[in-house]
Length: 278
Image (cartoon, rainbow, N blue to C red; front, side):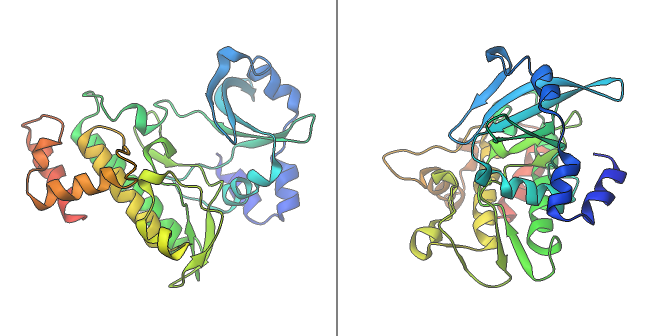
């Protein structure tokens, strides 16, 4: 997103921002081949996600178009897409309105897609993995301490599928559908939480509220996903099975049993940093 676009939207009202960011529906229909099945990237409970190529200023840009029939589900995405400005946080590229008054959010397509697709890949080096984790940590630090003076922005759904990777493997956090603003140092009681169970802070089950530490717990699960080279899992109805497994192996000093095999100095450095983060 250009710096001129960013500076303009920062001072706009939300209505003006919405109008300024809206592009004709016909352009998105053309870019996605009328939302053809072969352009369908993923299908979820809230969004259908399509890939496409959009003509902008004489050049074709690879895009991802998220089609949502319920406008209430995308308000957060639009608000945070306007207000959050950080290199490790995805910005909304443009918006389109569907004929039935639903919303399509368009982002630029990231060349290496989402982190979950690469967890098992031996091609993703340990230093690249560390770089990705540091980038996500910086995004969370921005949300929790720098985005607003007296409030945390709590993402509420940190997981590997919410981390997009550009052509340089720079991570970009996205998925603010259920994010909340919380006054700093206070519990934010909310019924909006829609995070995946295996990443969920166990404290939420008892408090029904979120703090910035809720994101930090989920980030800890993400760290172990990257270290172990596999997605977090649930077994025997234990939502925190993966987190418990990681802690057990850490406490028994046998993390090597779960770590992707490697004897390089890179791995020793990364493991030390991961251990210090617990």
